[in-house]
Image (cartoon, rainbow, N blue to C red; front, top):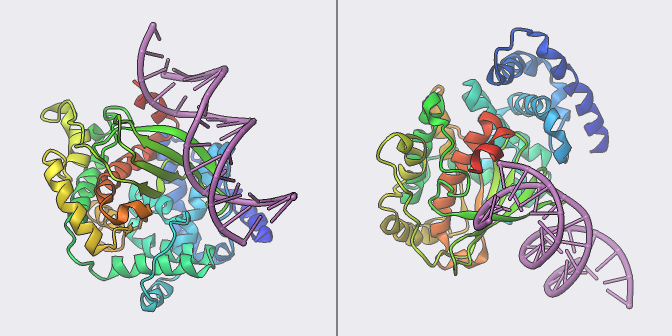
Length: 355
DNA sequence: CGTTTTTGACCGAGA
DNA sequence: ATCTCGGTCAAAAAC
């Protein structure tokens, strides 16, 4: 692996140099540049295959984000979707929420670029490649399979999808960006307080630990984000013992940003919906892992129309088995939005979010 | 000024 | 008994 990393680095170098596009008007352009450029190269860069973004990336990499992203996208693109299909055959087993989802990042990037469809499948595969472990593969496979196949109509899922779609739409819409009520009130409708962050060994990205800010609420969640702020993985633990805090407003302007993404999910009606979800999720998804393939959907709608979604594995802690699922639904939508925002500019987010 | 985030240290579980 | 690792705590910093 190490060797590959080295290679990867080498490969990555070219990316930074890209900025030759002196005409970068904005950061977004910057992103697009590498991304757009990558596809073509990607194919040619079969070598990239060897390059595995899996490499652990440390915080300081912020500057490297673009390069890495590019890599990711490339890798994703390079990988053939065939493998993905293969993965379908694999048993649907789930697994520890081991962090490992590069795809997210890739997906997000793709989404931004609009090339999304081209790579998301690959992305999954890339993930596999990156993670040889069975569990992971299975996990991924499941995801991919789910995404490719149509998942059972889980309500939660639907909502998620909708929220994502909306979110995606919002993304496209410049208006969307308005930092939604800060980051705390996650779009999932709950308020979270970060109480820790750590670089987990197996995961590529740092893992953040959040607690629900509600007084007696034991719910916690772990979120792994790529540098670009995209959520690689979310794991919920526990169950909210309180209704969602009602966002101050979502009827008018602000509503667009927050409301759509999260609310579209049904937050306005939240509690009710949540409960529904709880039961639903528990049964349907085992109450453990929720694929966010739907994201892909979002991307799809946004970009081209391709069903393959990036997946974001969301896992709930064992506790959720009983009913913590509500968290899931919440978190999912919320996190996505966050991720999206992150896409816009992770660096700035923290600032914006805070007051 | 109050709240949240950051981040290193600490703790417990598992190997 | 020791080591590793994930999760949490809590002081300091940032907003």
